[in-house]
Structure formats: C-alpha cells, structure tokens
Amino acid sequence: MKKLISLVLAIMMVAVVGLAFATEAGHGSITINNAVTGHTYTAYQIFAGDWDAATAKLSNIVWGSGISAAGQSALQTAYSVTDAEDVAKAIPNSDAGAIAFADHIGDSSNLGTGTTGTLSGTIYTISDLADGYYMIVDTYSPSTGEEGVVYARYMIQKVGNAIVNNKVDKPTVDKDIDVDNDLTTTDTADQNTANIGDTVTYIITSRVPDMTGYKEYYMDFADTLSKGLTYDVNSLSVKIGETTLTADEAYTLTVGDYNDTTGTSIAVHLKDLVSRHYAADAAIVITYTAKVNDSAVIGNAGNPNTVKLTYSNNPGHSGDGNPDNPDSDIVTGETPDSVVKTYVTEIELIKVDGANNTTKLAGAVFNVKGTQINKVIITGEKFVKDAAGTYYLLKDGTYTTKTPTDATISQYESTSDKYKKEAYATTSEQETKDVDFQVVTGSDGIIKLTGLKEGTYTFTEIQAPDGYNLLKDPITVTITSNVTTTDATFAWTGSDNVTNKSDGTFTFNVANNSGTELPSTGGIGTTIFYIVGGLLLVGAAIVLVARRKASEN
Image (cartoon, rainbow, N blue to C red; front, side):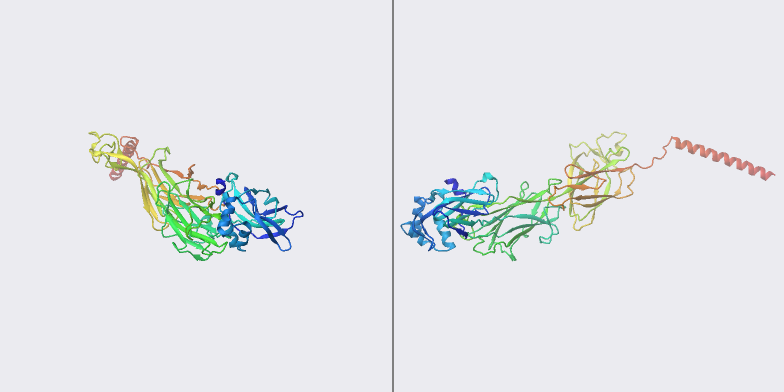
C-alpha cells in the first residue's frame, strides 16, 4: 500500500462522453479511451445505491466496496456528517467540488477493494461493475520503461456502461542551437562547430500543458553546460507566449559555480502556472548564450549542453504550499535529456626536410589567416633557463646538448647558462574575423592551432628554417563538417592535403628543401678555375705574339 502512494492519485474530472444502460442492471463497464501502455486503471466504488433512470439519480446511498473504514471516517470528518448519503449530498456539483472530494480521500490507505480491467490498443475496459459512484486510480510500473509518466484519476457516476476520455497531458522539452544567433527558432540545429571565443546561443522550448484538475503546477528546467562552455550571466530570457517573464516574480534562476570538470548548472523554476492563468499550449521559450572557452574538448567528443524538464504530473499531490513553491511531497514526472553539442577541432603542421620527409625543422615562421578566428591556442616547445638543464644556447639561436670544447666554444652564446625544453600553450586573441597571426615551428618542427571551427585556413611561410628555401606558394586547408545533416552522427572532413585523424583533428607535413650547393674549396670547382685561367693566359700569349709579328711586318 505504501508503494501505491508513489504511483500517484490524480484528481482530474473527466466528462462522460456517452452513457449506455446495461441490459442487466448492476453489471456494466467503464471504457477508457486513449489509455497509456504500462498504466493500470483501477475502479474504486466509493458509493453504492439504487440507480433511478427516471430521475438520473442514485438513491439509498451507502458506502461502496472501494472505500475503507479509514476513508469513510476521513470523508465524514471533512464534511462534518455521519453517513455516506450525507457525504454524497455535501459534495458540490462542480469540478472543484469533485477535486476537493478526491483530496479528502487522500492516499491509498483510505481505499478499499478495486476492480482492474484489460488493455486493447489504447482502449482500457473495466467490466462487471455495480451501479455507484466510482473513482478511477491510475497507477504505473516504471519497469515498463515509459519515461515522463503522467497520471490521472477520474470521478464518475456509474450508470450502465460509461465511456471516458483519458486527457492526461505530458509536457516535453527540446534544446537547440541558434545557428545564426538571432534568438529565433527559424534556423536551429542540434550540432554546430565553433572557435574558442565564439558565442553560442541556446534555445529551450516547451509548452504549457493542460492543467485541468491541478491546484498548482510547476515546471523546472535543469540545464547543464559542459566545462568547455562559459555561461553568460546576463543573457537568460524566459517567455510564455508573447510575454517575457520577470525574474523572481514569475520564475527563479539558480546558477551554480563553474567547475572545471562538470561545467556549470542552470536551474529555471517556473512558479505556479495555474495561479498565473497561462493558456494551455502556449509556447515556453528560454534562451541564453555561452562562450566556448579554453577548456573546450577538441575533436569528435564535442562539448555537450543538456536540459531536462521536471514537471507536476499528479493533480492529487500538487502541494498545499504557497503558489510559488511546491511542497516537498509534490509528485513529479521527468523528461529524457535533450542534448546539443558544439564541436571544436585543431590543425597540426609538421615542418620536415624535403630530402627525407622525416627530419623535423625548427624556426619556420608562418602567417596564418582563417575564417572568423576569435581565439587560437598555439601549442609548441620552448627553451627556458634551468640550472639542471641539458641544453646550451648557440650564437645562431639554436640549442645543443654538446658540451663546448676549445675548438667550438666561440659558437656558444654562454657556457655557463643551461636550458631545458618544455611544451607551452599560448593564446592569440583576435578581435575581428579574417585577421592574420604568426606561428613558429618548435624544436620538434610542430605547431598546433587548437580551437578552430570548420572553415578555410591559409598558411604562408614568411621565414624558412636556416639553410632552407622559402616556400613559394601559400598552403590552403579546408575543414568542413556535416552539422547541417539532420540526425547524422557528427563527422569532420578535411581537404585532400591534410590527414583526418581518428580523434577528429587534422595534421599535415610541410617540406622545405635546402639551398643550392656551391662547389667547395679544394674540390672540382677550383680545378675548373685553374683550367679556365690557364686557357685565358695561353690565349693572351698567342694574341701578344701575333701583334708583335704584325708590328715588325
């Protein structure tokens, strides 16, 4: 019986759509249309008596089999009477009266023996019922797997065969990314790509449910931004229909502190919707923005943003607190999570010697131009002074682990300073789109540009490594994705000159060739000079002799 309490008794009055008299008095049925799979509908006879078809009234009223002694006592106390007939007469002939009556019955401990039925499609039939006044209790077993359950309870005057329509209303929630950031739902998607530093606009949509039978109704939106997204504290807006709600007056907003593991939690609690008389089916729209930050997850995993809606689902337990905050025992349903993701990628450039395509080259300087870059994390290596280091700085700006000797000491910037090599990551802030910035290959020949969205990126070499020729032409890399494909598994695609790695990032090699080799001293080059010089001397002597003979003649 205790378990039944959590299965929820609702209070909604439902109109009797059609009445038919049974051929045999006292043996009729209740048919429930639009029944929900996994729900059990149990009819409890609260009052029994004699049905008078001429007057359409129930006379000689006594307690039915569906109300316990405790329940009878609770009703008699509530209406200040001493028997079933007086209780029946005291019930106001209205929806509110029926709701109050059901409230007085309370939980399942006040109920007696009930009758269940069978489900066929969406039709649930409870048969072999005697005339009387019935309360139908809707129970649900979570093992059936239905999410976001809503319960209903009906009060029916049973005469022959009765038909009722199940009118439970289960709200839903959906989250989208506003692709063009114009705060409308005309161009939305479940996925997008973004640069670090980009602002992403989120739109949460739901609707006001049919709240018939509820004294109070609450909706709570629990939103979670992953660690790669920073919430804009001044951006949130809540609208119902065409009305923009005022914080604290119509809703409360609770924002948790940013956590570098779990991100940020946002909770929007809509205060009692019943007392504020929102129209059923009115659109609920919540919008806010967040910025992609340096902790964004790079590659295929993406940066999720999740929302879940918790809502009142039991008219019988809507709470007796003030109209703005529910009691602790309010019974609620919950929707599945609605998730959107923002994807970020990186491009790795590896500078290599063109002779073997494996030797890494440091010191190459590139000018990079991209599509609407806001912020880029540039990853490389650098040398820092450290007494325990193993590197020396040479006068040409490079580093070596070789200890200086008398023959080589003149090549060292200092023989006392030591250096160690360490990785680093810096950010390049870009205030406008389509701007240039410079990057330099580290000692490992690598530069990584992290925090990029799909777009076109141009790498122009402006300084080659020492001893190597400058590249003549820029290198253009194009990154695309399938974010516009509905319900597709996200995927990146790179142009033919890059390799798409399995983690959703990109890499490519850039080869430099060394300069033209000139003949060295003592080699074949000097021999050539000697030969040519000798020939010139011989020729000059011949010319001189010929001139003298001509002069003598």
